[in-house]
Amino acid sequence: MKDVREALMVGRNSEGRLVRRPISPFMLPFDYRLQMSSLTSIMHRITGVALGAGTLLFTAWLVCAASGESAFSVIQAILGSWFGLLILFGFTLALFYHFCNGIRHLAWDAGKGYELPTMHRSGMLVFAVTIILTLAFWAIAFLVG
Image (tube, rainbow, N blue to C red; front, top):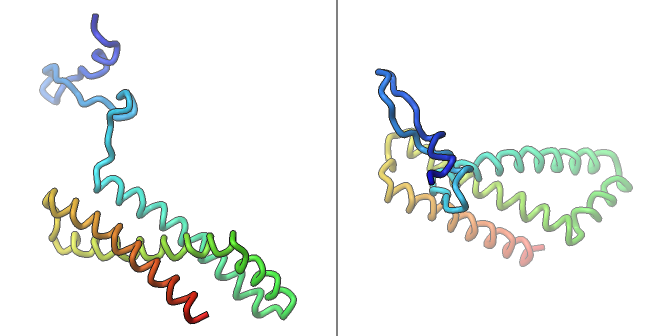
């Protein structure tokens, strides 16, 4: 007996001949794996949104600093709590990821790094450098502050 999904995989090409179309990864039973280029692209978009939210938080911090001592002490207490520090850690993680992946995109814009092994290596490098930069930033921040 054929799987019902088999019928969905048949289509016609521009010449009218029957061809097998690829099945959507969302219809596969958990054997779809994200490729490095897909993962880095999705993460780039997520970190872009996170940077937008973090910029709003930074703007609120500046507004509170300009508003006076009482408003500034409230936002400092929030950002100084464990939850605030977690948010700031996530913001710096997003910032460094977006920065590193942006450099990778600049290389692509120059026509470099499109080979699959190079794409995979550069994607892994982006994740590794992001973690190193974020941890180094926070280590320095705790040592100085």
